[in-house]
Image 1 (cartoon, rainbow, N blue to C red):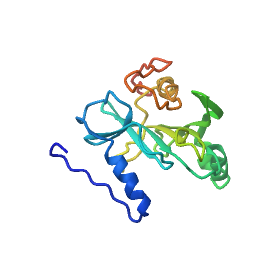
Image 2: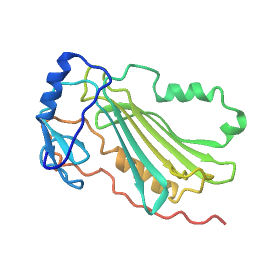
Image 3: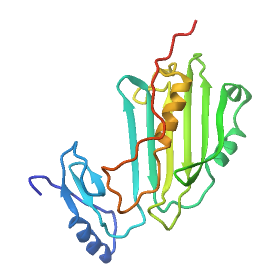
Image 4: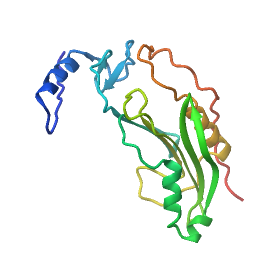
Length: 222
């Protein structure tokens, strides 16, 4: 299409899926790399599959955000429709903590832990501060909602924020470039924007986050 080639592939499939693929291709629209489509749909590099899309129950998306001025800071949001039920975030952490040594536990401080509903979606939240062996302070924030197995509009959601950890480096942890209060503000600002997707929603009419974001540089320790 317009000089751009697209390829859809599957390791194995049924004859009925061929018709579904044809319906999907009929919804393909070209877009510029930096273009936000005026119509709702599912974006891929150079194109968008415009709504309404064929009914499906296996959508999986991962979004990763990094900041040029804060290389130790990263945010990731993962969605998985149709995920099988399993232990929640807090249950998994409790199970992992049972096998953790005392020295490692003493280096961890829980800032928040418990149930948290965001945008009407029930989930669990765990915010940790860690003191690394090189005496730097790092952070790991997590929020997770199990979703509904039979509803693609309510997928499993997992959001994570890391600070003091350089994602593309194998070097040692570094001190977080943001104050703890600034990290909590950033986390709450992003988290508060999560809400159930509406099929008729206009992607250009996105509600602003409930809390403003103020980033402050970490002051050197004395």
